[in-house]
Amino acid sequence: MTTLAILGGTGHEGSGLGLRWAKAGHTVLIGSRTAEKAQAAAAELNAKLGADSVRGLDNLSAAQQGEVIVLTVPYSAHAATIESVRDAVQGKIFVDVTVPLVPPKVSRVQMPAAGSASQEAQNLLGPNVRVVTAFQSISAEHLKDSGHPIDCDVLVCGDDKEAKAVVIALAKDAGMQAWDAGPLANAVIPEGLTSVLIGLNIRYKVKSSGIKITGINS
Amino acid sequence: MTTLAILGGTGHEGSGLGLRWAKAGHTVLIGSRTAEKAQAAAAELNAKLGADSVRGLDNLSAAQQGEVIVLTVPYSAHAATIESVRDAVQGKIFVDVTVPLVPPKVSRVQMPAAGSASQEAQNLLGPNVRVVTAFQSISAEHLKDSGHPIDCDVLVCGDDKEAKAVVIALAKDAGMQAWDAGPLANAVIPEGLTSVLIGLNIRYKVKSSGIKITGINS
Image (cartoon, rainbow over all chains, first blue to last red; front, side):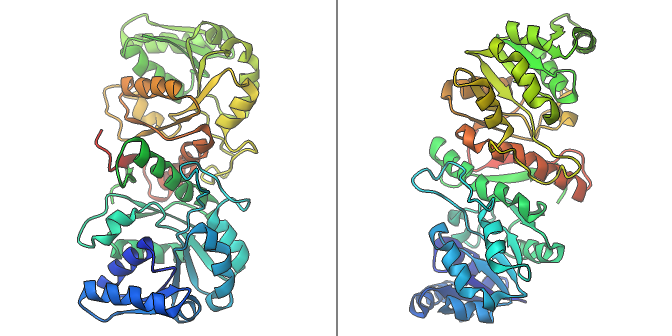
């Protein structure tokens, strides 16, 4: 079992992942800008779990104590949050869930100059952090109901095979099928796909469109 | 029924689409650099169809006679083919199926400076051509067996809604579910997804992985 630090974990996406991972037996640390906000979110998750297995901390403390770090902040807080934990996450696996949405046109793919948010994270963190991109397209609608199977696959990109295998196993623990989708240079696809799915939700009047990979026996 | 000109239609992708569209009752013109090569490919398709409904022409003649133009050339021939038919396709719908693969790393997403092959096509053709991106991720394995249902959806991007609706209907005629995936700026997703699927084919030892959209009743 792994100690997972979810930075920005008070949001829907981070809380949903934390709930599922705590249920699977992992130690979950919810991080936020203030410890108080994180503690409140942790208390809510513990109430749902009927247990006392989730803790709330400020982002830096969570990053220091976590073995695997998961970043689920809005893109506007992406660079600043990464810089605030850079030293604490050296040598660790860093899962970037951030989607570089540019309001108001959130259904239009608009990547940062680095190519994707995850490549930007890798540039900011340096070569000793194993950045992996994953979980962008999983709707918080799906995650919050932890008994519910998720009809959306996870594309996992990164330059370190072992780190990707860890993340693929974590996805499975949270009830999702995940696939090794290639190097971090491919992160534009899972990140940008999220904008495409937001557009499908609007155009086809649904709440949580997703994708499944076909043609591979899982 | 529409007259469809498939430029570079002697390849597996173009022939597979042509076969399915001819079966659905459309008039199919196979284009190639030389009329002779196109006529040979058309004869093969007619033999499969047991009919005489596909014609082979040089690319320019096909582009002149077609109502909807479909480009299925390797990326190395993309710009030159587009320039050779630019005048002939003004005012028409131009479906770009090209994937900007950069050998030898074809499983790595590597987009041209314009953002995608389809945006490059739009820049080369000018604003009076309605460029639509579609069909990149459909494996030729699937297409060639025209009785076979295709377990892969088509993401359709473009800046003209009416043109996208025409292409979504053409996908349906060829046995595929297609979705309006937003503006042409989103073309990086269907194009780049092809590299991701090529990587999945290699890593998971299959021939034709694909994607299906979930969460929308079709």
